[in-house]
Amino acid sequence: MTTSNLGVFYICYKEKTAIEKSIASFRQFYPDSPIYLSSDGGYNYGYLEANDKFIKTSLDPEQTVGITKDIEKMIATQKFDIVNLFMASIEYLKRLKKAVDYCGTEYMLLMEPDVFVRGKLNLVDIPLVGPKPNVMPQHIQQYFVDNGGMNNVAWGAASGVMKTWQFNMIYNDLINKQHKMLEYLYLDPRIACYDYLLTFLFSIYGYEYAENPDLTECGRNPNWQTSGHPLIHQYYENYVSGSGDTGKHHSN
Image (cartoon, rainbow, N blue to C red; front, side, top):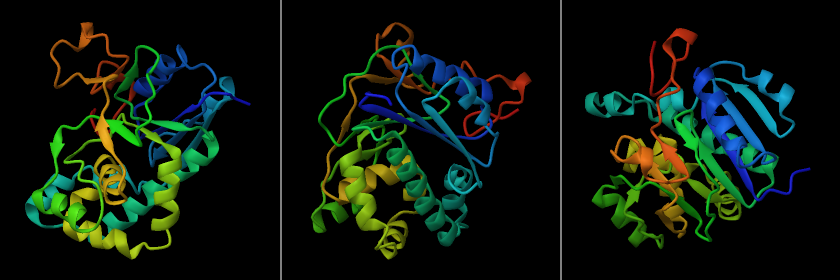
C-alpha cells in the first residue's frame, strides 16, 4: 500500500506517447503515488498496469471531454444539447469520485496528457488550486454571492490540485440533487467543461479556488522552459502524429 498523500486522476483520449511520458515525469518524483486513468472512448491503457502496481486504468464510453471539446462552437451556433452536457458533467464527477476512492489520498492532481511534472509539488491547505486564466461571467459571480458561495472570480482547474475531503462533501451532496446541475448549466453551458465545472462547484459550495504557485502554462509564459515551476500545463512536445496520437489538443 502507498503512504503517499497525493493521488492522480488522468482524463485522456488517444494521446499514447504524451500519456506515457507525462506519467514517467510524475513517477520520477512520486514513485508510489496512486494513479487512476480514465480513457474517454480512446485507447485502452490497461497495458500500463503491467509494470506499475500503483496505477489503475479504465476504458470508458466517450461521455466527458469528448462531448465538451466543441463547446465554443455549440455556444456560437446556439446548438447545444443541455441533456448531453448534463450527462457529461455528472459522468465526469462519477469518474473523479472513482479516482478519489481508488487513491485514498488527501490531495488529487488533475492531470491531462499536456501536463508535465518537473519537481516535487508544494501541497497547500487550500481546497482547490490551479491556473486562473478565465474570468467567470458577471452573472455567475453574482450567483455565488446571492447563494452563499465564494466568488473565486476565475476558472481553469486543468492541472489543478484539489483536496479530496472537500470534493467528497460536494459530490455526496450533489449526486443526490442532480437537478441542481441542470440549473447550473442553464446559467452557463460551458460549466460542463471539467476545469470550469470543478471551479464552479467549489465556488458555489463555499470553497476557495486559488492560483497555484507551482504551476506555469507554456502557452502563456514565454519563459516556461527556465521558470523553475515544478508543474507545467499546455506542454505539447510529446504529441507525436506518427504514432497515431490524437486528442483534445492535437489531431493527426
